[in-house]
Length: 485
Image (cartoon, rainbow, N blue to C red; front, side, top):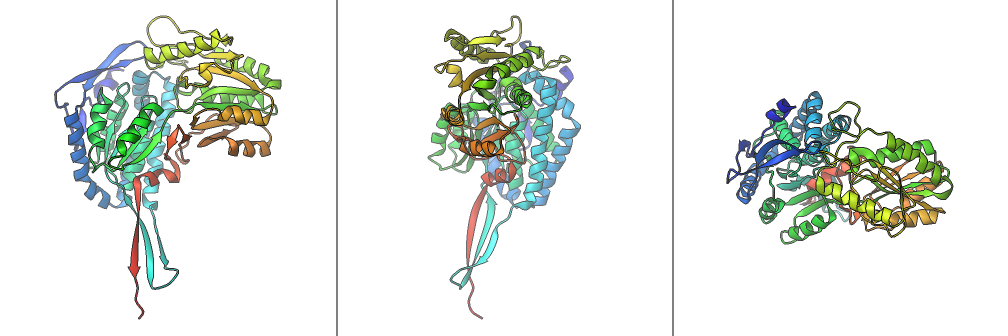
């Protein structure tokens, strides 16, 4: 383990050079499974952010002229390197974030797929040519890179959220300044070194970790030469960033908070529904914006669904992510565990029952037992707030209209899940849910080939799929006069 940490760069990457921060300050990165200090890394300052912008701006013109095939081949080489080093990438994630090695390996594979997908999309950037309807000219529509971008990634998927943003930016011909999360910066630093090895030119990717997001974001967004921002994080922070982008009218992609409903209808395959619930709830220890946050179950099957889900979650082994057979690791820090404790205690105080779990573990590490809550009353905070932990609150509904109403009763709209054997109902309810994504008879919607994103307070813009690269491209129209021969 120490060998893996020892190989990771611990400085800032600016204009192709690894360097200390402007004031030589550092900050620590800890293992949430045992609270052990892993290492110290450079703590970026405002001057470092400004230097990163200069590097990205300087590199933009030549990078935009680089042939799409060449940009795609760099991504393809990076995909191959990630595939070769999947075990090392997974171990690093487990150490800094806490998830089990099984989960981390799955993320390493998922993350690499974004590079493969966008390596193929790089050569499919197109436009159109058409005669003017009234004659006398031609219309040419072309696509161009939007320019230097600021990418801010979250701590919960430290590798995949990087590749999901970097992949389309590289494919489109954009340069980048990346602010990785303070809690889990090592995966991004490792990824930056890997991309350099794959042949990414100096200045295209600049990485500035810091203990202060505003210290990095403010000078970057304050520079009008930076033309786009992509952010994954809380809705509260997202709203502030939208305001910061307004003066320079910078384009934005915002993947914000969620409060995913999980609907189980009376005709559902209960075995599939329970397995889907475990996937949708427990992936990433429940620390996922697409995690099922509240379970609305048809009254006739609610008791049996709760019993089966209780049995499944009660069997999950908790421990440090590197231990054999562990499927549930720690939460990211004490603050996150305190939030889970607070929401569960609120529900229990209002009359809910914990059929399994309902409490933290004692000792080192920020562990919380997988929990099922039955009889959760309408006023419980856990039905309104994103829990971001291994807790499944269960409520009931009587008919389809009530199910849809309950599912949509939130300001968020990232993803919803529904289980039913009725195809008509699946389409009808899927179209009615006010979310950007819907999982029908599946608890997993993440897919590099599909557009990821939400509506309402869950943000705007899409990552992944054919739509993902559009966020990094401007549309230009050329009006061409054509005279008579």
